[in-house]
Every structure is written in structure tokens, then in C-alpha cells.
Image (tube, rainbow, N blue to C red; front, side):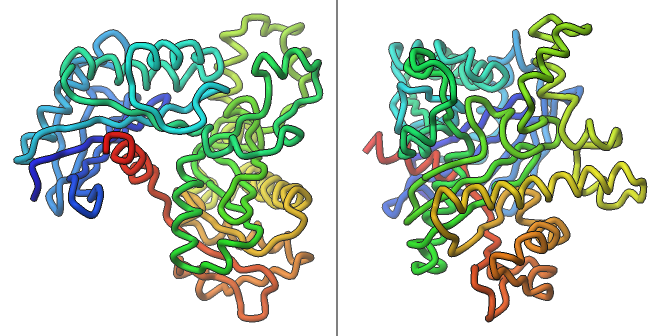
Length: 390
């Protein structure tokens, strides 16, 4: 045990994930994790420290009483650790054009993050609530922020450009990409597992309730499926992915003129939930025999395989595919359906390895390597914060 502790806060639109790290000579060592789901009532903090698991009721909510949530979380988690809290590191979804790497948080940085709320209206305010709560509760504790968009700042201008007037692009209306912390971790982990594959042209598939793909070359982002917002790209649990702007114009003219209603529709009522009318959870849909469930899964896999083809065009080839996040790591049926549509690329999946969720799931004769790699965004957040503080 050491005397120093670092916490990571990963604030989503409806959850708060907590990482607990001890600061050792070798770097941050993960010793615990926690989560609060704001859709539950009453709120419950579920967390583990080492092999011990805990569940505590939490007062407060995700808005006006958020500081109470943070205060109780600190009290519960830190009670199990003898060390002093040295730093808190946050995941911030959107860095805009301002933040292309992690940063220490002072008043100026927090104000700049606040100006980016219109770019991520559901996620950015949650991260800011956590940041401001910590500044009030523990002003002596240093804070850092890691940005989901930063990893993609290496992309060429033509990749990030939308076909709109140049002045709007210069004002920030462009493709940013997200899940960058996950992709940064995958790039580093792949270098450990297979250095040769890591140097090649790789498509990483972050498939969870939010989902995107990233084209990487030698671990550097070259293109991604998500664009200006986290609504873009492949279909997700409740988000539509690509959507013809004309469809939005139609909705605005025929009963949905308010921006708030359209926002709720796009973030919460589309995607797999919208297509199936049953659920946005692929586990539920795979177990459901109704044709609407099957169609939602088919659409999900079709769009992913199609996007892999597009990203191959950006990369000029393909050496490996990595599956990660909740669906990518744990649902072999989805991986099978995606790769079956990509046999024209010379992809052959080893079904035995795939069903066992092994790290390498391609056959020996496959022209493209296939990997399953669990992601760890909290570790990236912690490592970036330690580098800044050191």
C-alpha cells in the first residue's frame, strides 16, 4: 500500500463510473472500481476494493444535489484506503478544437470546457458537475481532464471535414470522433499482444450501448465512424447513427419542431430500441425470437461491416480488426455476423476461439487478424493524469 490515491470519474449521460488507483513507483495501480446508475431510484453506489464488494445507498441526484453524490462517494470509497487522496482525473467527452491532449484543471480550463457544452449537451454537463463538486469539496486536490476527442486530432483535415461552407468548418463544425480513450488503450494493448499487427492498418470496433469504429495506422487515428456528435456512425442501443438530414427536416415540419424533442428522440428512442420496439440491449434481442429483434441485430451488423469497408478505403488496406467494449468483448454471435459479411476481405474467424472469447479469434489462413481485447478507459485517464502531475 502507498500513501497516495487517485480517483477517476467517468461521467456519462446517466452513469458515473469510478476508478480507484494507488500511486506506486511503477505508475497507477488499479485497486477498485465503482458505478452509480442515475436511472435507478434510490441511487446506489456499487463498488469493489480489491476482492471486497460493497453496496451503499446514496442521497442526491444527477443535477441539483450532485455535490452530495460526490461527497458520499468519496466518504464510502476512501474509508477503505489508508492513503491520502492526491488527485481526481475526469473523462470529458468533448475537447473541441481547444483540447488535443489531457490537461490540468484550473478556472480557465474549466471555463473553456463549459463553452463546449453545445457540442455534447448530455455528457459535458455531467463531467463539469463532478469537476466543480470536487473543487468545492476538496479544493486542495489536483484535478485533470482527459478528452474522448483528443485521440482523433491526428486525422487529416479532409477526413474531418463536412461538405459545408468553409467558415462553418473553421468555426468548429467538423468531424471530431469519440471513444478516443478506449482506442488509445487498445492501440497500446495491441502493441503488447502483437507488435506486428499494431504497426499495420487496424480497425478497432468499440461496441457497447454507445458504439463506434476507428481506423488506426501504427496506433494513430486516421478515421472514425462518429463525426460531429456521438449520434453519428453505426446504429447504437438508442441512437440512430447515420441519418439523412432530410429526415430531420421532415420531422421538424410534421410534429417535432422543438429542438429538445428531437434531441430526446435521437438520443433515447432510435437505434436498436427504435428498430426492434423491444430493447436496445443486444443480449435481449439475441434471445428474442421475434422478427423485429432479428432485424435490429441484422441492421447493426450490416452497418458495422459496411463501415469497416469504408475505413479500409481510408487506410488503403486492412491488417487487423479488434473488438472491444461490452458487446465486442462478450458477444461472439455479433462478431460472427460481422465477420461473415467481410469474407471478401479474406477474413476467416475461428469459431471455437470466438465462442470462448479468446484474445485471438482468426484462423491460421485468415488474411486479416482478429482480436478481442477488453478496454480500460479508466487506466488511460489515470495514466494521463499522473503524467501531468509528475
